[in-house]
Length: 353
Image 1: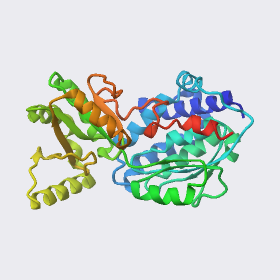
Image 2: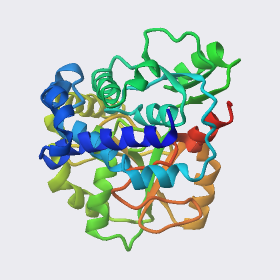
Image 3: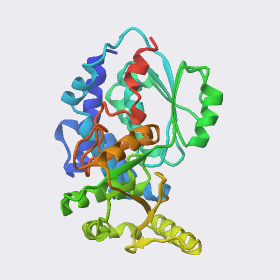
């Protein structure tokens, strides 16, 4: 199965997924649609019954982001930076997270596009969408029948890619440390706000905070504000578009619980009825809570964040800095070569040959 053939298969998969974003069937995919369109459409709507965080809006966001990546131009441009050995194929065990919909897709894509065999343990929180995508990909090209194995227990692998918490990473290190591996731990994302940021900038920042209810490692969990910054500017900018997050029961329960805990502890809070702002030096805030800290020297802040880069997935800001920041509203739209934890997954896979 050549690289060109694999790319063609993923381009077709991207075209299939794109239909649900534009809400219009692609006539060129009639054979696929006959077997999968209705089932996939119904599966999207059922996600919330499987996982209360996976409402239709967030599932569609994830599908849309993936379909935007699976274009011929994007895939060839991404892979043009590598020399892929067509004759070598390894069994790659992948343990996937389930915090946001289809969060393990990039590992799925990286393993298969490089010509390797996927041995995947899916998260119980997110196993139905990717399972259906496997079936669609296998219908596109039957060669994938022997290249994708969904398992309950990893066995017979040559290397491992595992994503989890700081606690689970210790377990992964113990069991898989003797194999070539990528083991990902907890990371969080932060935003640097400047006095010159506009209401539109701050509104876009709201997407980085609230998309997927803040459950992703690319979600902003902490704000850095210039000294004496009027926080009401931030509250006003996010109010209209994001106050609806409390309509999700799981988010609302987290918000209410954390509010009660903080108030019992006599913590000082800022509250706009759907997110709590707490001044704190930590990076990882609970769901429904956003930590913040004031700064008065941007260079000093950049140095501090650089020293903590192993804890940070990305930095969001309206101005680029030596930290290689992402513009507001783009945190959850990484490019194909924007690798989690900064580890080049494709190069790791190539080096196994």
